[in-house]
Amino acid sequence: MLQMERISTNLTIQYLTQTDLIRYFNAKEASPLIEQLLSNTDTKLAFVNRTNFEFTLDSIKTKFGNESNKNTIAKKAAYLISSFIFGHPLADGNKRTAAFLAELFLQINDIELLVSDGEFLTALIDLAAGRIHEKDIREFILQNIR
Image 1 (cartoon, one colour):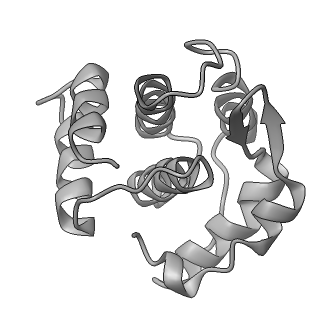
Image 2 (cartoon, one colour):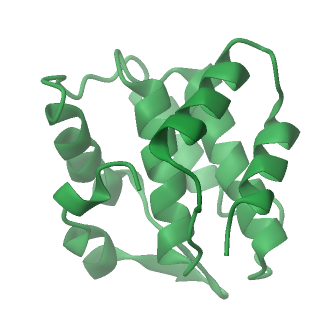
């Protein structure tokens, strides 16, 4: 998991919201975790577009329904990744943050991602470069979770 062992998720669990059976987090809950993630590489959390950041985290609640199954959750995680990479809400660290938030989203929904950080980030770099698409990230997630 992307440096999760060094990042406390207590804030997320404390403020966690739940729609039907899928658990979510919002911008207020995610911001301190992102700040902590980025600080591991001496990067400061700086928004290029805070509204885009907040919209992305809010909109996954309404995308693809709320049926708590791996396919729906993988779609939502792929959408979160794609929105962060192409929406570019942060000045730096968008791919790292997208990977971290997607993995956190999976984790709070009791789904484990079974790939190394390197494999996951390579897939995200391929997405950012246009070599693969959001549906490919969804399939990648589905093939590598339990």
